[in-house]
Length: 183
Image (cartoon, rainbow, N blue to C red):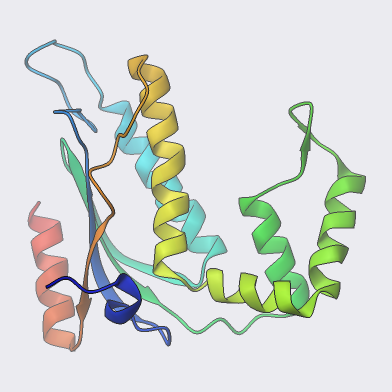
């Protein structure tokens, strides 16, 4: 029997080994021997996205590996001890206000103030900034869009949702990090 992810992920944080896999024999990175196309540049997309999101979310990256059709990350969700203003600023880094493709400073400032003044919304965003599911959503969605655009196709790029395994003790964290590093 399967369990909802909310029962598998501790809302108070924790350390996890997560994995996302591509569908339809899609290459995430490396050279596709069938077509001869080189997708090695996608490794940089993933690395940049991991480090960008780890600065915004309350997440520490312990190890990661990018394979030909999937990636692994060992990460820790940390308690979020930041001010209301920092919550709004971090969220606006994830979801900036855009007008005709350019960020408008006045719209950005108005949205920031709206977030800060709405305590319910602020609490929701604070929770999202320390959520594994939201981290993975912001990790996978932009990568899928870039890859689909590059491959000139539409549809799913990732196989289902991400896989996650909570690491309950130091030995399991180290074992997962070794596994990821050996990949």
